[in-house]
Length: 169
Image 1: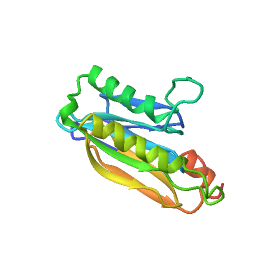
Image 2: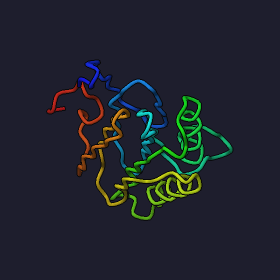
Image 3: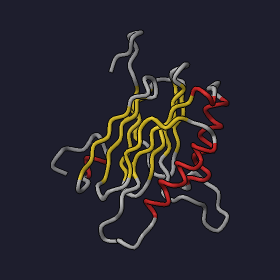
Image 4: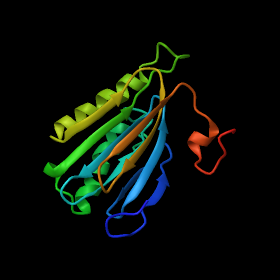
């Protein structure tokens, strides 16, 4: 995709448990089930990032970006370190589906709650919430424009994970 200044926008697939924050323009995508992606964007400076966390909270005091209670505050810190202003940040929360085969699991619901709590505690405006249900999601976030596209699917194909795979995978 070409931007206003005629530069190419890079594409990046975000794996579970990772964060990508950049001033450079990216189309960041990921695939979610019960996991959550929080997309943060400085609406004035026009840059941002996305995380993809698996669990609401850390286990056994292992602090890494697989948990929302670590990943979201760290992503906020990374954006501020790059020059973002917290009061200019806007958020999208996507994911948190219920696994049809694990009806008693609260992972998706817990993941949603931690995102809403941390963003609320930091007074960050949440502009999009596409959470819950029992469908998987493929998300693409434009960290330059702040736009997000969410595709909902009943089942994920291999090509949903890897962009270079054919549709028949």
